[in-house]
Image (cartoon, rainbow, N blue to C red; front, side, top):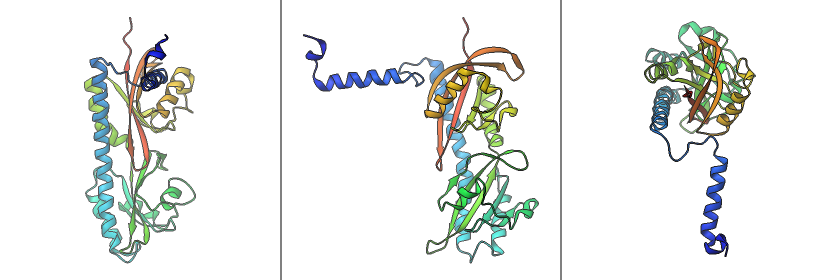
Length: 285
């Protein structure tokens, strides 16, 4: 009698499913992890939770402002500037604030240095089209601002008392700045490096600031390394996991290559995903 004739059908199904999971899980965390890997997963959770706290802070301010603005006649009234100035005065992470009406025209901004933007139509490009096309809170994809830094927009809809969409209040931030506040200390303490990127490969944070704003799948020097490209596709396709690749030893030592280990997790926020990746040198031996 063969083994499958001795086992009940339900047990056979479980065995087959388990085998399939093991074969497919080349980069997924294994069930039995060493203390080092457990510590890295804890570090990933720490980073994810603290990044979310900052995004929640920006979103919370916008939600409060939206409530104030909904009581006004329109987003073109003088009271709108007062609300935006209040946001700016207590801002910790945003670089600027704005309101846009339903057709995408900027009606007010803060701080005053950006006052020349009033009257500009933000449609016709991203993230403007997405913001105007949505009546829900949203986080934009990252973009290169005209000033040259990497930017993101968080938008919160402004609704009248009867639910009519009046426009949105926006906050623009440079993610590399607030991510550095969280990540920098843990990189130094744990002797690791961290990258935060979108699933499309756009890099939001890296200790090597020259990599911020680049795309893993498009730009040099990343595309020179086939195994990095393969790992990048795995990272893009999976919320969490681990893998290995070969790359420059450090930003200051691009003449030496070394094998590195990568561990990642995902922050999901207002419809977007950020991959948080911890890198460490593989133990050579």
